[in-house]
Amino acid sequence: MARRRRSPCAGALAATPKRRCVFVRERWASFDCFGTLVDWERGFRGILTANGSSKADAVVKAFHQHEAAVEAETYRPYRQVTRMALERAIAETGDTIASSTVLTDSWASLPVFDDSVEALRQLRADGWSLAILTNCDDDLFALTATELGVSIDRVVTAQNVRSYKPAPAHFFRFRETIGDVPWVHVAGSWFHDIVPAHRAGIPRVWIDRQRSHEDPALASAVLPDLRELASVVRTIVR
Image (cartoon, rainbow, N blue to C red; front, side, top):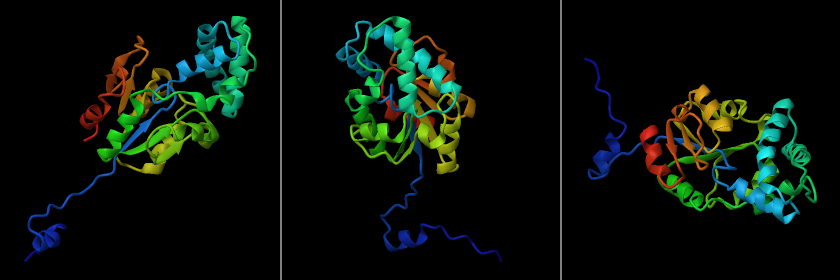
């Protein structure tokens, strides 16, 4: 006669009848950092203005385009990327700025969004493991990590993978490190994060702080900020 399989909770339930046996499933929420958790644009404009810029908005807009172009050329350390992109943005706009290294020189001054710390703490309280997938390098992220209000369990930087999003290396590396467990990616950049996460089949929440006009259908969910994130990710990863 076949033996009945014994429930793994049987011993615990027999000893303490009122105790429930609860299995905790590992699940991950990864984040882009700058533009999602950190108010990169406001901080960058402030840095430029403090260093003599009279066209900060135009420089930031030009910088976005040149940064993506530089990152697509070949792998370079992020400090070099920002210097080259800012030099090109200054030349394009005709602005006058004290130095092309002002962004990374003042990196620690970049402000965290008001809703970031509470959102991360709520996810932690709900049992999520937290990760950062960022296009900056190790030393720069270290300057920001202490401002996030929680410890981050894993970090994948451009320095780690020698590549920049929207190339998929960050996502592939992270999947290798966590294995086949539930994972949702949260990001503000449609170009750098939502598009490659969509292509990789990773559930993704787009934090559309800029109220852009990109295709929302590529995201699993779209939010204007992080305030409702904890409740939304529960519906995406169960």
